[in-house]
Image (cartoon, rainbow over all chains, first blue to last red; front, side, top):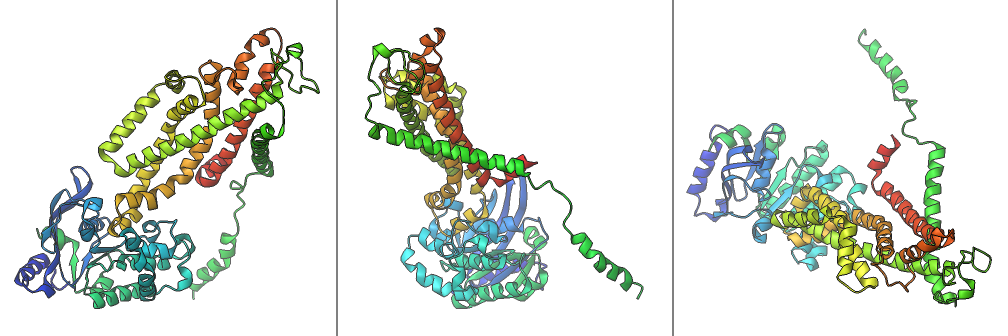
Length: 246
Length: 307
């Protein structure tokens, strides 16, 4: 939180400075995002955020402030009513199903409640490899599953179970594995560890970090645990800084 | 020291707090439970008997349901004719079984067609949303605003009498409620986080519908289909009773009841009573089974009923 006074200003300035350098180029840029669920009642007003390649940014805010909505916008899952979103410098114009598959799958999304984020009819193995099946890459599924399960700390006997037969922590591990399945370039973790105990939190964060170390993916971690985000992320943006900086 | 005393007394009092409360509102009494299983068992036995009779009697019993015996017309129920005979001396038991066969076939087939159409329309409307949803639901509203017997009569009147027009008419008027149920289910599922996760995983709309949404609504749609079987049977009988359904020579329950109208006024009760029972008992049995199934898949409703 050392750079909280003008985080976006400095971030975008540094992004402009490094635009020619692919290693630190801006992957994701949100400018003046206004979003909500009812007309004329925005939940997020004028939020701006930049994410450089390989950077881990924490978004810190109290409950109900709209940070999850902003995370959904950032992952192309919610169409904002105003503002621009640039992915690799290209403006995104379509959202949800309408977004091109390559743009959608650039994001790996882990949500707060694994129970709601998992289709109750799929086994954990099917759940984790569903993105590969959905994108027509079914033959790669067994190999990818074998890579992902040790990474997130799942044992093979859990893979044949359905979501109601595993614990929240185990299910969240599976959800993380699913998010990593297509090797996303940006990970969006929306309160990923809010419901979990300290050891599971540590394991999940370690899994995310080892994936990032391997692939250089950027991370947008949303949460209200300042200590965790401070330890986890390169920079932590308080909610006021995100919304006021536009 | 002084603060420890209340703590120990609190822990000492804890078993009392945790002891099961003497509240009996969750348990339904043995009487109700036995009635429940009795209802389910009776329904199951009756449904099985009806299905077996309908499937086995025509191939196994070498009797002609059309055989006219004018010397034995309008006989009262007896050992040789357990349900009596009709006004041209045909055996009513055999006619009833054949009639039930036609009614059950039309009912089941129409309910299946209606369930498939209703699920498809409801799932499309719910999954696509936007103008597709609006148009589909206005069509459903428009069709539902017409009394569906009237609509059924209209559909039947377009064709020559036969099984298929009746089936089409009953199916065309019964998919509406299934479509509404499925659409509502899909709408509630569409906003769930696992759909977000699937979108982020690159799934197309079609993939999400086929993999995540339709399997989730299938129990509801199947239940709606089973519940509409009795309804469809009643409609088939109503159309036949009005003389618009199956041709008069085919034994259907509606035709049998319609043909018995004249003799009822003359005091002959059996040609009306037995086809009527053959219509009521199987429909109640199927509805009873469907009700038990609904209680199973929707425990919340069951618990509300218990209260």
